[in-house]
Image (cartoon, rainbow, N blue to C red; front, side, top):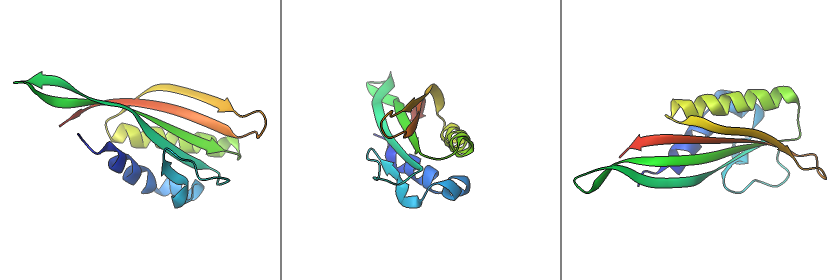
Length: 121
């Protein structure tokens, strides 16, 4: 099994553009740091073997969700989403889903992006 969690975290946390908007401790796996905005969370939706040869998998199918959390301007939301998309494409992922949600009571915006890749083992 490929450690995609580590590679995604390293790529997101090493981005100079993201670091201008997001504190380094606000990029987390699964759990959002309370009251830190903007923030980025990500988690693995699915990671399964595929493309078998001689009873051994040669590739993995990986699906990942990256969420960006905001209480800030539209410009920051656009810049962060564009950079996350660029980073994930650089890692070999294709975006398969994109939507915005807002929590009515707190006015926290969540930009949800899902990605999929077939990764060689």
